[in-house]
Image (cartoon, rainbow, N blue to C red):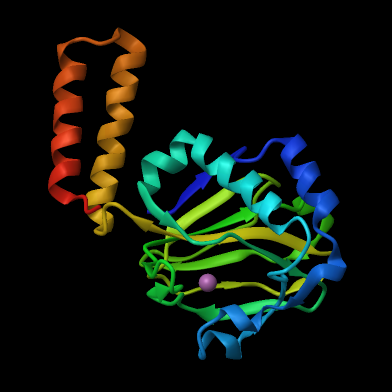
Length: 223
Ligand code: NI
């Protein structure tokens, strides 16, 4: 499932990020890619000792916590440290798959990847995130503050930026539910039980849906 989530960041949060993401603090992004992805990765990333890095990570991290659609769809167990990437004119990230395992402390499995777009799409040309699916390629270039959440198992790329600069926040999620098809069933069930609650309140249908949701989560989830 590829999910587009609008308004993950407010305009005030975007403003904070833009004020503090100084182009001078961005370095070659090859360091955080696997050996094969490194061959096609031509972008820059906020350096790990940049001022404000932890503050900026907190802004995004808090927004993810508060976003119920993200929480419902990803069922996050672990979220990797958030990276801030910048593609200036001529930069791109060719076709690659993300590493299955990441980090040392803690070591995590990447089930889902996300790109949180930070730049107004009118301010740059190119820079689409293109994901290969069984239905063909899907291309995304979203409003600032919106996110694409997609399976880490896919081949994907970022098209060359031909004008302006494309800023994004990216990270990986290890989900409580490893299997994508099971995660999708849980997402649908959670959606429908919330629709039922919004329409009729806490009635017996809601209780049974909630029971099924909780019991499937127990059956399929891993903590
Ligand atoms: Ni990637």
